[in-house]
Length: 302
Image: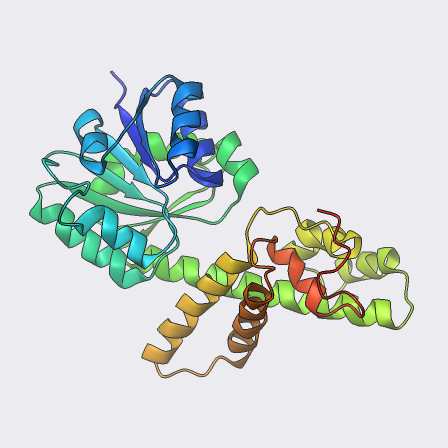
C-alpha cells in the first residue's frame, strides 16, 4: 500500500505537488493551509480532508510534506504549543520543501527525533510547472537512511529520480539552495541591467538577446526571463519578495563566514526595493522595472 500523504502549505508549489502525487497513485488524504479557502478548494479537488489543525494532518498521514513561507512559519508548524505537527508523530515522516535558513532545518530534525519521527529537507530548485509535471530538481538533506525511506515519493516528484540529489546532513541542502537562488538572483539582476541599457541605447532587444545567448552573456535566466523583461510580462512563478528573502538567507550565511558578497548585497537591495514599491508579488523578472527607463512599475501587462 502506498503511504498516505498530507500537505501543509498548498500555495502554488504545494498544491501542484499534491496534484502530481495524487495523479501517480499516492493517496493524498489531508491538506492544511493558513489560507482556509485555498485548503478547502484543493481538498475538494483531490477528494481529501481539509484539516482544522496541524495535529490532524499528522494523525491522518504517514508522510507529511510541508511548503511554508519562512523560518517563523516553519517554527510555528513544528513547535507551536497549542497545535503542531509533532503531536503523536511517532513513526511519521516529514519532508520539508521550503527555502528557509539551514539552522531551522537542523532545529526541525532535532524536534522530530525527540518525537520519534523522521525529518528530511527537500529543497526545490524549480517552479510551478515542474511541480505539476513531477520534474522538480530536489536537493535533500538529513539522515541518509531517512532519504532512502522516502526516496520513492521524491522520485515521483523529480523526473523519475533523475533530478533528485542527496547533499548531506541536515542544513546542507538548504545551504546549497540558498547559493542556487543567490546566483540566480544575481544573474537575473544582471540581465535586467543589460537589457535596460540596451533599450536606452536604442538597440533592438530581440537580436541583442540572440547575441547574449551565443556569447559569455548567456544564462538560464536569459531563456526564462529575457522576453518577459522586454514585454513587461511578470506573471509570478518565483516572486521578487521570495528572491529578496532568499538572497537575504545567503547574505546571513556569508556574514557568519565573514565573507563580503557585494553582488549578492546589491541584488538583495534591488529586490527589497521592489517589495517597498509594492512590486514584491511580481515575478523576479520584474526587477527590469527598476532598470528600464520610464518604467517604475507603470503600464505593466500582467
